[in-house]
Image 1 (cartoon, rainbow, N blue to C red):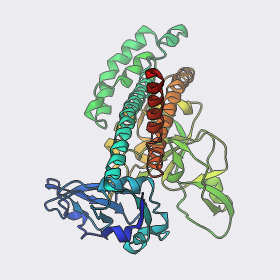
Image 2: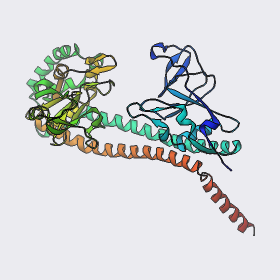
Image 3: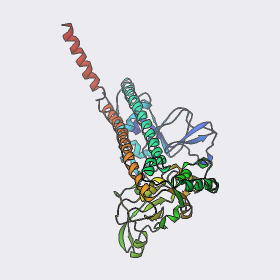
Image 4: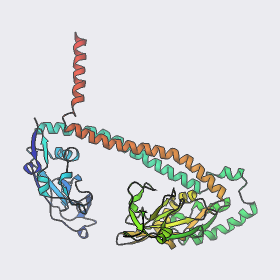
Length: 446
């Protein structure tokens, strides 16, 4: 028999005192929990025991966490303390994650929030404590098995990503086209190779002034002995241009303007476009063409700034000022080859070394990107590299996609388990097997 109640009738709810991020201590003794879980450390705690906390402000409004013992909990999280004689903390956590719908408690569009008053009205049901412990134990067991599989999938995904990157690095070191160069007689004459080798050390000294220590043995440099050369990116493009700063307009032609939000897994996603009215002059200046490269010019994440996206179609779209657009001289360099080069560790190290960080934002300028050295062979070898990479990477990417789907299925399975737990179906399969075993035992003994 399950008892129906509300959070207001069964739980004490409050928002603790908030400490600012400036007060956080690198060597603090106690963890601090905020809207998105653990956010730092402090020299005091305001909760001795673990607490169930619900984010009550911002984009992650409604997310649920359990704090650690001896923690400071900030006021942008609502503490939910159940009457432990009626409801266990762990059971309530699973209820919040699987059965309690907080959408009706969230108010505000610009700044979503949850208040104590809105939470009080939320209804839920619970069995007796012994039944709760039984349900929690079963969920823990099932989740443990899912977690094992989940971690194995994450490790496999990580290894595949490393393998994918290693293929790109090998391609850009000329290792995937050694036979091709030999068969197509693309290697320089012995005399020229000797001369290039003599110049190599001088070239390295020049480059090492702007590259990190890890590049001192950079194998890209050795491509000069394969007939490869290098140029600054600015010498391989027709034009570079920062994007449109306009956010709205009352006149002009409605045009899709690409935002950072529209970049999904390194490609442009057109499913949720932003339309801005642009003049003919603005369209002429900012419309993208197939094989243009977009560089993320500014971002709060140091890992995203300086990332490049190859435009794959001739859709009529412009781009905002979070990007720099590069129009490539295709007579000199293959756009797909350049895309792979710009995703290499060499490029990421260069961006890391030359980006500017201020007020939580990371930026790269046109001049910084234009001065980056690009190593490349003939157009024919570039095309061969692209062909080899596309074939090999398609197999890797299909495996990565499969693993991603399996990881998503693991999350769906978690939700399914919680749904069964609070609909009374969690132990149904166990009872079926138990009945089958009892019947088998009966017929065997008789």
